[in-house]
Amino acid sequence: MMGPVPVFELHSGFWVNLHHFLYRQAREQRDPAASKAAHEPLPGLTEAERQTWEEAVNYYAANYADRDLLFNSELIALKNQLGDFEDCKELAGTSRKECNAGLPGKLTPILDGAAPIYRAHWWPEHDRANRAWVAAVAPLIRQKGLGLAERLADIYESRWPKEKIRVEITTYASWAGAYTTLDPLRVTISSTDPANQGDAALEMVFHEASHGLAGTVQAAIVRECRQRNKAIPRDLWHALLFYTTGEVIKAAMRERNGAATKPGQAYVPYAIREGLYSRRWARYLELLERYWQPYLDGRTTLDDAIARMVSAM
Ligand SMILES: [Zn+2]
Image (cartoon, rainbow, N blue to C red; front, side, top):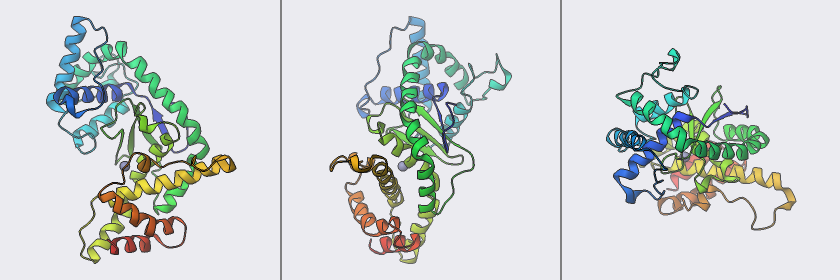
């Protein structure tokens, strides 16, 4: 753990990073064209190291590369477990009994074999990037975190989990650059994704964590659709999450910068900057601006805003 900040607990965990790095390399090995991230060349490995490392990548290619980090229950459980074992030097429990992770398949020898190689050749740089990202975002969270957390809980008429939210900082965090799994609510964010830098890091933390507050909104959308006999728009709730976090962060940044903000220097929400509101989402944006924004402005209720949005679809 890297110092208390309100609500969040930010980690640069060795095993979680090794796991995501192997997963990424395995996916690139299977389909080099599908990934834009450059395949990192093997940095000066001995022949024995290269063999062990390739065996690990091959194991991930055979067992995990086709599965989705966000949706596959085994990968979710594995990621959570590896986070919990952050302080262990190995996962077989040979040096400390409580470090016997009981991982599935041959994963324990695979990871314990790859670990010293990763530690020697990649981890110092990955850990440095993760810690630099944390050092940049932590003051923003300290300054704005409690206020943002309260505002978002109010908007979603929902409560944050009592426990701190564990955020794993990794160099690779799925194709999207970040993802969140529920029960328990855990966030994984890439420290190196260009879209996650600067003030956007704060938005990314709160967007991902908001996945844990989305239940009320999702239920309201489903209910309104059923009442009107309409198909449930699959990811309207997710566009709503992006829109809401973006607006809330924008307001927080305006407050911070005060009169110093010149026109054109205002914070641009992630979804706008990254071009998420295209195709189906362009229509969602219109609906959100028209029917959800009044709710954010305190001029209507959550249920009413969702009802209007759904009936306009
Ligand atoms: Zn999301």
